[in-house]
Image (cartoon, rainbow, N blue to C red; front, side, top):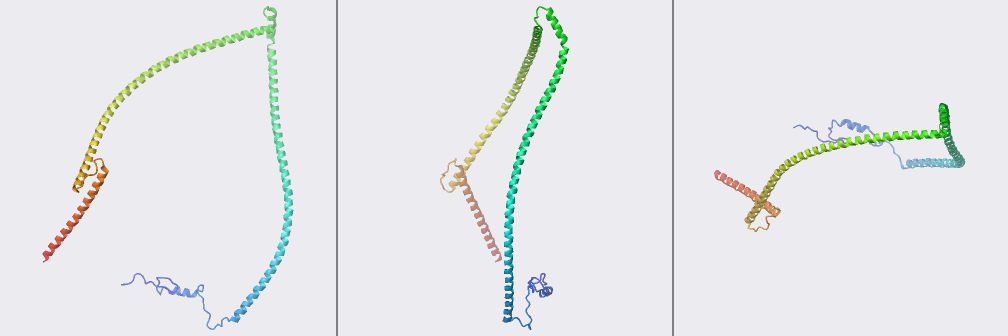
Length: 338
């Protein structure tokens, strides 16, 4: 039978599951590479002796000493130049520090002067705005007074004929003592007229309000009567609905009572059945009942354990019955063969 999968083999590199004919290329490639392969020296090479190794190490040591000396000299020169640079940097740092302190104080002075100037400018601006508003107010007042003066002149010119008439009335009348007395009496008459007109308007308004109040009271009484009629009709409907609901709930209550009674009857029957079964099982085991009728949980636990025991007994009986039948069948078969 031919093999479906080739036999596991290891080639020169270490790959698995390769046949020799497929590993030739990997073998050649591994021979050509020299990264992980140390080639031995040729057979005719003399090799390095101990003397040559010593000479070579001595030369390398002398070269390293010369290089160390040169590096020490360069480091000393560099150290000296660095010291000069550091001293120069310290001098520049002190000068820059002094210059920074001077500039910083100058900037602080400038900031303080700027803050004072801004505060003064703000105060001057606020005072200028206040004075401008005052000037505008006074200018407006002067314009209004000038306008009122012109209007007053026109009014005085318009009422000059009336003044002449009043003077003639005072001269010809014996009642008035002066023009002012005449004007006061006219003002009193006008005020009385105004008061009479106001009283008349107030009384007319009170009469109108009383009429509106009467109409409102009448409408409210009519609405109250209508609302009472509606409430009476609603109460009648509610009474009818309540009576129907009561009859409905009476039927439901009767059914509920019947249901509760039936439930209690079923419960009593179940308790009687459980207690009767418990007594039968106790009688079967020749035991005296120790649980009462109300102790349902313990009775059920005892019945459960007894039923489980009966089930196990039945299973064992069925197994033995099956074995007996099988033995009888084999004995009959042996008898037939004989």
